[in-house]
Image 1 (tube, rainbow, N blue to C red):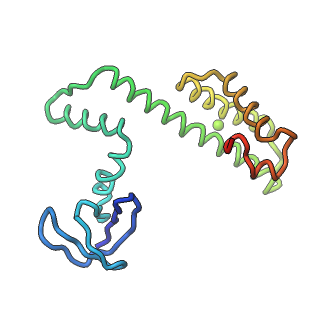
Image 2: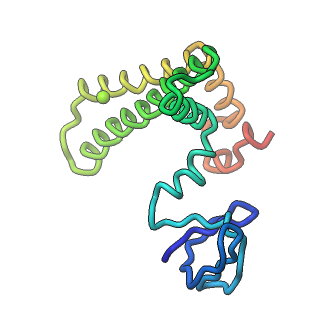
Image 3: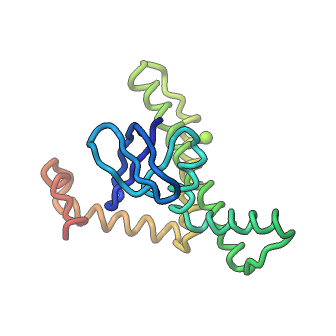
Length: 182
Ligand SMILES: [Mg+2]
């Protein structure tokens, strides 16, 4: 049986369980480094739900709250969840969709460039314009979600690039990245 071991430092390692001893506080031994660990640091991967419950859901605290509320509603018919928490969760879901959207549209831009530059297709400028517009829409949506104006975003970008390339672009300056290391 395969399992994922999570070290106290958070590193993960896939291991093969050889045998189990005892119950809830069992020690489990596996191949690889011949070590033993407390059972609560092992996540069995024979069912993904175990892994999801043990790791993923605890990592996204807002969605864990939502899932707990849904569990409560399914068990008791209602849940005692403050309205502002629900609104924050809906906001987070909307921002998540915008995050997926910007990645998807950037992919469409990348595909157009790949076909033009890599496959020799004629560039469809109108299509590129539309896809760049889709990217821009999601940029605006995400900026709006976090209370930023597009002008602020653009000005901050210009300031960052001026700091990074005070004398214009150079490979050396791009390695130095003065705006990050300042
Ligand atoms: Mg598009």
